[in-house]
Length: 401
Ligand code: DI6
Ligand code: FE
Image (cartoon, rainbow, N blue to C red; front, side, top):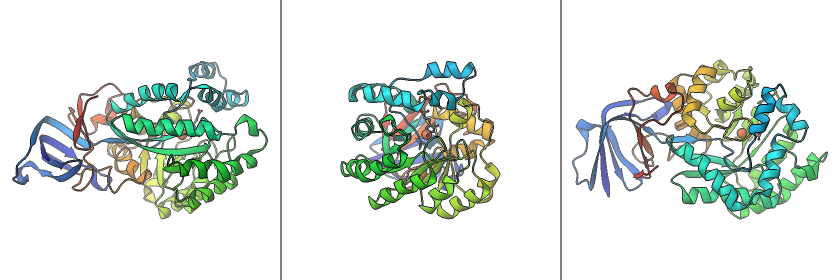
């Protein structure tokens, strides 16, 4: 069934630039874009449906390529503590931080986790998100990681969004393994990853490379195990210190290295060579009041693709709007609105290994797009959150938000 969408302008984001088509039209056939171009050149045809987009600006559906949407509890109490001057590291050392979310997540039922995550995910969807990556990592034992990953799969099955699931078992050291980080890494590699992968619950494998999490040597063992299972890797790297996790990620041809405030120019060169995407997370930067900026000039100079994501998590980025992250990427990191939009469309798709089918509006790609009632594409990064008037189309069908 062919559908014609017209009376719009398009920022197709092909090649990661606006690639504007004024007075455009889009022909979809089932879930795919069959044709896109100036309205004056629309192929003649028998269209089953015609939609008037009322002068909207059409962009690809937004892609949030880094989130921890599934967790128990929340940490607004720690937010208050931090405002009294207690640091994130001090809270973590006192048993709070990730450990407190792990306790709440282990205690929650699968249905409870689903219900709370569903609400957060719906908030992202109402902001124009049509694809999202969600990580496990608040379970830290086989049964609890499985529970989270099953919830992630269920979110993708029940909500109008394409969901990629990432196993982040190497997020933090669970209490049962206190002082035995190497044993926990061994458990991840020998038991958890093979079991979870065999159950079809894992699309990629992530780890947290940081002095308060896992060393580059430990991360490398996780990468080797992931690659044996044929799973792509990604990494939380250089968020709080410079351990060159991003260079390690590049050596393993990681899809992405994420955070990166403390990365060096050498890391950027390695990532550019490997095609590893730099995923910047301005919500965490803002929420932690970080002052070290990611090296934007080095990333640009060496041609590293830059994505932007919510990092939606209870500790460092309780971000329920991806568009707000666009504004923060521009305001905090001095990205241009065009770079930021590429960061939540084409480059985000690359960070998830789905750029052949998603992330830009081109014939042959999946028909995931948003028709925004805005004056210019830069408006998406300009307004601070809020609910912009829009129509969302996923797989060629209008979504009811
Ligand atoms: N980096 C982060 O910012 C989050 N995880 C990570 O590896 C923090 C997660 C949390 O504090 O709950
Ligand atoms: Fe994260």
